[in-house]
Every structure is written in C-alpha cells, then in structure tokens.
Image 1 (cartoon, rainbow over the protein chains, first blue to last red):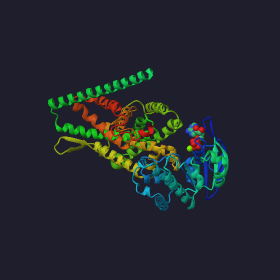
Image 2: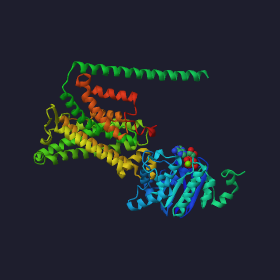
Image 3: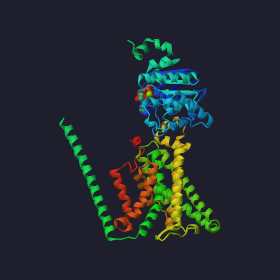
Image 4: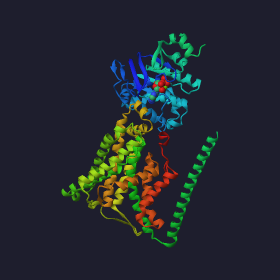
Length: 235
Length: 355
Ligand SMILES: Nc1ncnc2c1ncn2[C@@H]1O[C@H](COP(=O)(O)OP(=O)(O)O)[C@@H](O)[C@H]1O
Ligand SMILES: [Mg+2]
C-alpha cells in the first residue's frame, strides 16, 4: 500500500533522513522505533507532505504522493495524528473531530464515523462541547487519534501516541489502536516505547540517525539481542 | 556571584522604575479625566440632545471603525501580521463606490431604482476592495510568509504608500463629492428630544451590525470558519487535516477587504467625499480599535470599534475640550492600552500561540 523509496529529507543543511526505504502492506501495523532525534517524525512528515524529500519517492498504491502538498495527501486517505497531539485548543472537541473530516463531503457517513469514534473513546463523548485545550493529556491523545480517524484514512500515521501518558492509559490506547487495525485501517506507528509498539505491530523498522538500522517481524525484533539491549532495556 | 546579584538588582530596580512610571501615567491621566469631567458637569449644562446626538454619531463612526478593525484582526489572527495597507484597501473601495455611483447617476438609475442603486454601490466597493486585498496578499505578503515578522510589516507599509500614490496618480488629488442618493438623504427627529439621526447613519449602523453578525456566524458555524480558526491556531496541523492553508489565508484577506470596502463606501456617504488619503486616518483608528479589543480577537474588534467611535464623539464634550482633539483622544487610548493592557481590553485570544 505504502512504499517509501530511499528518501533523503533535509532541514536546510541538516541531512535528517539519509536514504530510508520501507513499505507498509494493506492491513498491517508497522512500527518505526528509534531514539529521540532518529528521524521518525521527519519520516512521517515526509509521507504526509509537510516536508519534501530532496531525492527518493513515496508511493501510495503505486502513485507518487511526495510531490503533493499536505492537504492533498490527506484527501488521498493518509492522515496523521502528529507528535504532541496538536489538538486545536480553542476549538471544541466536536469541532476538532469535524476538522478531521474536512476533506469529506459525505455528511451521513461522517456522522456514522463520529459515532464510531465516540464509541472507541467514550470519554470524548462526555466532553464534546469543551474546548480541546481543556482535556487531559490522555484525552487529547484520544482526540488526536479520533480526529485522524474522522478522515476515514486508508493509512493512519501515529506519531508517539504513548508520549507522556501513564502506563495504564498507554495500554488502553494501544488496545484501541489494535482494534482500529482489526476494523480494517492500516497503521504506521512511530514509537520510542519499543516494548508496547512491538507488542501490537506485525513488522517493524529500527531507525538510527536517519537510517534504517534493522528490520524484521515484530517477533524477530523483540528477540534481537541488539534491540533488546538498546530499546527494550534488557541486560 | 556578585555580578549576578547586581544584575538581579538592576533588573529589579528597572522593573520598579517601569511600574512607577506607568503608575504615574495612570494617576495623571485619571486626575485629568476627573478634573475635566467634573468641570464640564459643574460649569456647563449641556442639553441632553447634545449628548444624544453625539451618542448617535459615535455609534455610526463606531460601526465603520468596527468593520475596518475586523480586517486588521482577521489577518492578524492568522498571519500575526498587521496589514497596514488595509486602510488604503478601504480607500480603493470608497473610490470604486464613488465611480459606480457616478455611473448610476449618469444612467438615471439612482432616481428610478434607489434601493438597487444603494446596494450596487456597496457591492462594487466591496468587490473591488476584495480584489485589491487578494492581489495584495499574493504580491506583497505571500512571498514573505516565512520571513521574520518585521519583513511583511515593512512590505505592508510599502503597499500602503503604493496604493495611496497609485490612487493619487490615477484619480488625481481633488476631492470627489459623494452625493447621497435621495434614499439616504435627511433623517428623523426622535420625538421631542431634539436628537436627529440621519438616514445615512441608520444605514451604516444597520449594515455594519448585519455584517458583524454574519461574520460571527460564519466564523463560528461554517466549515470555512472552522478552517480559519484551525489555521489561526496551527497551520501545519490544519494542513494535516486536509485544509488548504493558502486558500484559507486568501479567503481571510478577501473577507477582511470585503468588509473594508463596505466601510469605505459607508464612510464616503458619511463624510460626503473621498480622496486618496481617505484611508489613512480611519486605517490608524481602526487599527487602534483592533488593539483596544485585543488584536486577533473578532468580537474584540467589534467592541473596540464601537468603543473608539463613542470615545471620539463623546470624549471631547465630556472632557470640555474642542472636538478637533478627538484624534488625540483616540491615539492616547491606543498608547494607554499598549502600556497597561497590551493584550487589549477583551484580551488577545491568540497571545499564547504568538508567545
Ligand atoms: N524543524 C527542524 N529544523 C531543523 N532540524 C530539525 C527539525 N526537526 C527535526 N530536526 C532534526 O532532524 C533530526 C530528526 O528529528 P525527528 O524526525 O524529529 O526525530 P524523532 O521524531 O525520531 O525524535 C534530529 O536531528 C532533529 O534535530
Ligand atoms: Mg518525533
């Protein structure tokens, strides 16, 4: 479904991605793990069209999307829940969700998806008319994921959904991510919490300083001695 | 160690000096106002009709300022840029209204189709101003979108001078007389209070109120309004949600200029004349109004506009000073608000993002 071919992305002179290649197949959860500054968010933003790769390509179902602006990429069914949640603080919870459906015109189906999102995250339902900025961190993460789901994405990009959340809440959110996947949405999950990510992913890639250091099935990565030492805290 | 203490000390004393200075300003201004108002109340017994007239006049002026202030505030809310050319966009709208009025007159339509004529003049003024606003964004601001914040500000001042000079060359330096169509000539006495309201004034108040309500509803409830608010908060995330940010920015300029064009035509009718500098002072006043209400804050701009209009019309009488000093009052208000409440009387909604 998604094919990323040898992308090089720069911030001015900073060479942030040094040739990243990977793919995501229909129905999978694929995780990108790596330390802070490895280039995970840069990769997602390059896919989303916020950043342009200097060389390399990003193909969605075989068609290039790296030449398209971000809002067009969303229209094609790739939506991101960005790092730090980035809730619109002064828009209400409902308005935030409606912003997720911005590219869509099918009113009835949008209403259905709204109901589905509120079923996934009942706590949002209780706060529909509150400004997004008044939600707790966990609720904001739920809202960020729900907002992205409102675009009815074929591919959902999640950037560190566990960041700053209590372990119990992380577990809950990861279970929901798994549910979303089971209902048919393909997911590319970026995480520093390798333990949790590898527990729900089918396959994974380890990013180090803008390059892919390792790749494999989640099981292979969980058992890899290097990964265990560096990312899973094993001794 | 010693160095840090002395630095702290000097910081603190400077802070104290600053707050003492602003206290002093507050006391002086407060005392002046109390003294003058007291003097007026005890020595001059102005009739109610005078106050009533000035109240009405203030509301009319306030409506125009509010419409114009919305243009500053809408653009600031999204781009954090003060569009100093906005007053001149209004001026172009006023000229467009003037020429369409001339044309209607030459066709004899002003007499036969009075309501249509009025709406047509307003419409032409608004559309032309809107086009100028869109072109301005494209040529003067968009190329500087990622430049430091001072740069588009300078571009705005350049655009303002350009528009004034272009109008001077094209339309000439002479005052154009904006003759009122019969529909808005004259006015009404309110009972036996001695208060007289002009039809133009009523038209301006009604139109600006309708437009403000329309704008508020649009921003609050429509899809494009939500997109504007989302873009104002976070352009990148809005783009991730599928919002075409450039399009929303153009729309915002178009909307602000559209309202500015209406203000231009109304001011033309109100003052009965237009020239190439007609946007300058009202532009500054509307900027003041936007700051009074809290720049970036839409209801604030409406409030600030009406507040400033009232302060200007009632102020000189209340303080017992000649009405020529109304500009002094307006800009003193600007300075005072900038000193004591830089976020505006209603608070700058967007301050957290700007910080
Ligand atoms: N806006 C930016 N400007 C310059 N450099 C950046 C910017 N954002 C990220 N970088 C650099 O790019 C590299 C990758 O960052 P990022 O993709 O955010 O990493 P991760 O998401 O894996 O923590 C880092 O070295 C970071 O310092
Ligand atoms: Mg990151």
